[in-house]
Length: 478
Image (tube, rainbow, N blue to C red; front, side, top):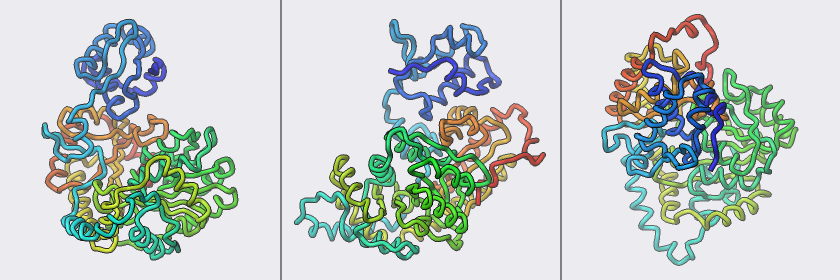
């Protein structure tokens, strides 16, 4: 059981004081840290006395804050061991990850995923008709079903990245792919280039293998060419998400791709390219070539979970030939392959029109969401990305965690901005990710609740930083 030092908790809390009683503000701030994983289950909290001294508050404040956490079943007093975080499993905890409307009426914007498109059912039906041919095999498919690998290879080749089926390893979603890649190529203690603001699960896969994150400085885009050139000199691997970046929606320009790939080749840095959002080109813009087309030895990770449906847990790795065997061997140590039936469904999806249907739905949802936000929350600053699943919103003040707490009180579940920053940096307090992959009526209600939550936490926060022309996060949308 790890113990959280008072100074570390104070750093995570940041400016935790709001408008209510101090003990309640403190409890709410710690609650947010627990909900989004910055304080893991089982962590021992600092003693009430030491935390009071660190925060320069009375011991009564910390005592009552801990009582609030225990009343909400987020902490437990252990005889002789102080207070530790306890997050019991509940049905509502699971539903928060998969439902638009939770049983108590809560709307979740904590995930960037939508319901299955109408055409997916026919893909399942066609796959079922093809299953008898698979019954004659062992069913163990550590590198993937042949028909699906062929379609994935054809997909990459059409995009401008020549690929043969032997370069494809089918996985259980993109997260499974990243875990396999990290376990194969990461050397413990060695630097790995990552984006300072990024989808957190990719970074976590690399940290689990002992990588030492080397975050890129935040700039007009998540990837400044000069910063990447400098970082490549000391890093063995780099994890990049260049296509409708999660969470910012940015799209890496073709010229930058060429320069970045050249720097990586020169320094011998292996690029791992996350392309899970590439097919979500909502506005039909001309896409730059795949980043890996400029670096033949790069590894590319793809998935159908965002393009088609989150319940279709099919992802893949596209690797150079010389790394395929090592990746398959790693995969076998983890499991013996993805579901044969799901792979047949995935093959049907890649032959049909489901991605086009999904893009059309998302375009409508995005535009409705944008109009509602601009109407109800005009001080929220954001660009409208040409693709992806999210709006990356800059708040008028560093209030992301407070907004998350206030929104949950109004039955709206969010993820605070620091969740997407390396090391859970307090810089994320100025941002919130708002996914739009939900029915339009749900999005409209979500914005109403978000506006009510913002009014509760605003407290007269000025928008002068944006009005005065100080740096904002708008340039992160390319």
